[in-house]
Image (tube, rainbow, N blue to C red; front, side, top):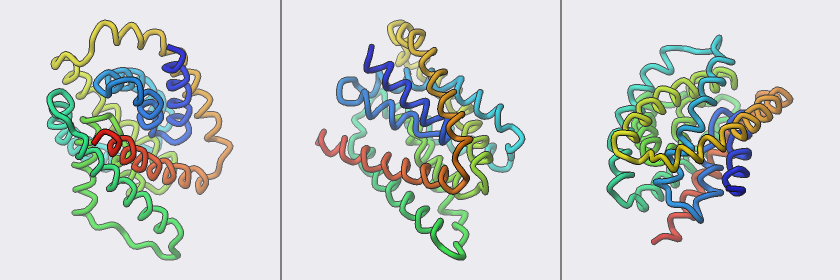
Length: 241
């Protein structure tokens, strides 16, 4: 339980700071000792109130033209993702997603350094939206989702607001699927009750810390977390082959 508490504090500190990547941190810390099918439901339920808090805090920056269509795409991808998680061995798929996430992260880094960055094509962003839903359904990982929203928002507050609403909608849908498929158990719920106070502490510290950084630094942190997410996904799953 000590390792789970540390994972929760670290994961939700990052959530409060960047608006995402809590799953990356939580899964990376617990992934060597716990099966993913037990990690995902714990992180899902712990993350649910954090998305409510962050989306409400930044509600003035919400844009329905961003969060609504993206929520539809993410839900569409979550359906096959949940069933693969329940019945399949998606190791190779996770490696593929890791490579995609690293590539997108470096593309975003180059865009940040460009003097006159070009707009991303709508078909590519649409594909990223569908793939991000599949990745969310499989592991609850919002890396592709973060890449998508980062492309179509101009400020970090808008990024946090819109991505957290999408997470909230996707989490609600996935929570129902996890419950119906038997992934969420009574034993998992008991662990979550113990971890909730640590989630709130980590989230609070992350939100407070984010106010001390300027927009460019936070955006750079987001990009770095995306690249790290992809690299960890690749390495962890190559070890399983």
